[in-house]
Length: 302
Image (tube, rainbow, N blue to C red; front, side, top):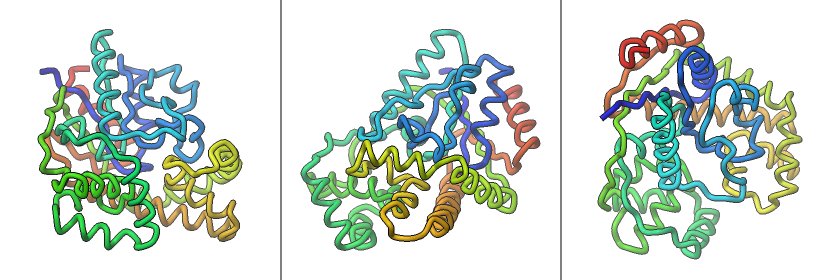
């Protein structure tokens, strides 16, 4: 089975720019594994590749959903595997790029075959989550399945889905049969020093606010006043609080910076335990590109 390359790593580690640069040299098409760039209109806060960049290097699974639509991991996998197959059929190389580790695991390790979501039960769980907080519900899942609790982490959406399955069936998601992956993957994981990444995360957050993130969120709220899941993404959630008058613009920026650093820490932990055929690159910037290029030559002959 032909191996599919995957470029992974924490937010801000340079995956998008590295993939664009590589794609201008090699016959690549990017298959995005990112839970937020799938949504139209979420542009500034996701640092989404511009239309001009996507014209130079084809991208898949970007701007494919409205913010009001739900993107499940099962739906992602179906769409991503379809895109990979299409790229291969054209004689080109699909490069999976992203930081949503759960999506990548679904592609490379397989996915548990769960029953369809129950919107009524999920709505009740969301209300319960708002009333009781995350930790009591996470403990309920942890008692039934430590594996699922580790996978869910601090992600409320994944917690609600896991508990919905557990309460409906009496069986936690990890005990359902797993559908095997369609493709085999070779993964390059960027783990640059935090001393290199942290200032870049701060600068990126300030740049996003300066580019008009508040105006972007205001426009999205006008179109989707019910605050869909997409607007719970880092950066968007903090601006929503500011627009509701809960705190100042300066506090929104500081909350954004704290949240993105906390997310990056969780990604470091996640990707350090990435299964399969994995190469780690502990560099950033130009050195990271040289390492990526060498890795491609070694493993794919390109």
